[in-house]
Length: 164
Image: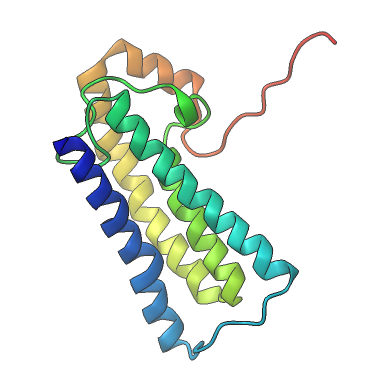
């Protein structure tokens, strides 16, 4: 129950800051004060944002159900998780977060939101490489090292079927 409550809090609080509060401040400071009229590009960006949000929710549920932990760094999963979206990329939660930021940039046609996303990605990349991955190797040993060699960090591999 604790893991579920922490995951719900972390899944709502952190994305709210990253996806609503900070982009709102950026848009306000760059004089974007209204919603654009809804056309094809806006619909595509909304679908992209919903896809990103669904990734974050799916991964959070996976951490609770299969990892016996949370997405909150203070109470990480105790079981190694390499199923669901983790079969395709090692960091699907971050991928989901960045998809939402990209969708917002497209929706509002804001280069500044893209710049925000790029500046946010850099410390995340450093954190993943220098902190998160060594911790996972320490906790899960050979399982995680093997997983790293077969699963890309950010961009899923497209596997081709041999034969037919």
